[in-house]
Length: 299
Image (tube, rainbow, N blue to C red):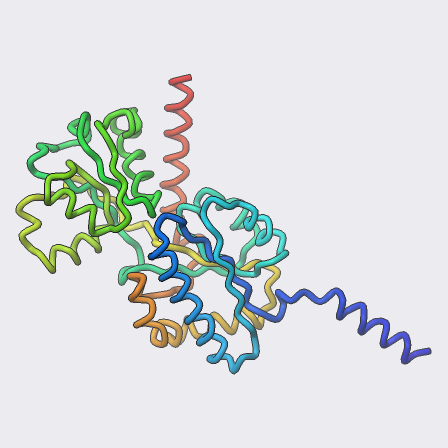
């Protein structure tokens, strides 16, 4: 009788066991804007996943699901601990859903190019004679389709400084699929201004200093922006998070995958906290308030 009871308890526990408690199950949020780049991301992350398993002697399986930006059902799957115990997303997605994600998560990490936080710059073609925000009126804007934060920062500037959305100021907006094309379009007079990460602009200038003869910076953001952010669900077992945290803190992750991460322009993964990204969240909250005030005024 006792053996049957023990067997029953074991069976119940087995049936109720959550596979998320024994594996890394990441939802990786990626844009569906460029199939070639999307496939590159998938290839890099898949490679890292397999090597990550080997670092832990395959004690924990790594499952990665790539989720397009336009699909929202995976948020529920993560928040309610149904399919994913980890989430990696663009910062713009995190900011749009930060209240739900912060409530559901307990460990955050960031990944970005070289610097811990990024500055954005408002870069102009010198021929366009843009000296201030009001000079953007009637000008041609070139934007990067994969980074909503660029446009959000520009919109924040014009809403705050001119009480207008940038979309009502410009003559037209062209979207491109590479950061570098933003600068080249200014250089070859295909556009009048753009927003880009300062570090990327500096990299481009280091390769071709002549660019400085044709473009100039008229505004810079605070260093508050990130390329992406990752997190673990609060119900994720301690052993799973500690296994990840160990190789982040001792540098194993960044050292092991340095060459792989460079393919995506990222060279560092770092544990972070709510306090570390507070300025970024404050910026976004202020931007949302400006948008609401503008929309209310124009109803």
